[in-house]
Length: 374
Image 1 (cartoon, helix red, strand yellow):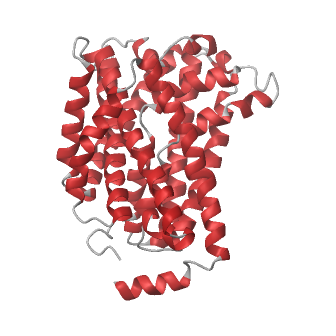
Image 2: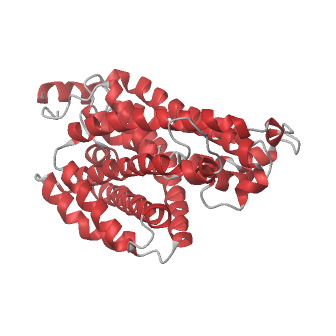
């Protein structure tokens, strides 16, 4: 049992999962899902994908609860054997590492496009990584405390922006309902499910919970919270920009914020404030993935000093983040990661759970062993 870090309560797990999901997806989701669906029924796809991801998340925590106090990298060998466990563990670590690099590159692209136009991409990437490592060395509790402050402020600002945008909202942009039937809605499930990438941290953070029995509640609350945020975003952006207007824009959500101004209300234009806070939200996604990737390397290879691992990852993250030649290749990397997550965290946990039942691994026996270790 992880005595020094097994003190994460349910609300903190919810913060971790929400911060791990909400990132660049909210800026690009309206465009990707609109192209896939092609009708104003995109919001239905978001609801359905939220329910699917919620079900998968419950599956993940069910698997983790059979091995209390152990991360996915520690209990996979008990289910599959050592060699297969190394292969699967390496795949998960590679996924986290590449996802870290993707989030950092997206931050650099947005910064160079809207804030620091003449700043080289490599400078923004390097600064982001060094700021991140400074925070990561404080440990998981420090990271959670930082983003438990950032997340509410970001969500309040997002809600304010959505409220102010109602002046331009056209309900007719969301009509007709199911005009082309239900098939277009199903086409939107894949891109909308990919925007939930980040829920897989439950495979690690569950091991650090004080009350593991509350893991189901944490998974449901966090995924449903993200679903509501995505749903409101999609409805607001489509209602303001229309479906054809979204499909031609790279960052529809940000373009919507730029499209209106309110005279005499605190600030006339909100895009700068919005983009700064949302960059912090993308940074949160990167920070948690960096930390969990380091945990994976530590647990899989049975190392001790996680800080050294975090520092050793920096040059790897930098190189991968700098590999895409342009924004299109960066977004293509994000699509690849989303497809990879479907296998690693959609199909694989179900297979592992079935094998654990068949081979009678985990469950009450693992719980008793964890209690003895504590």
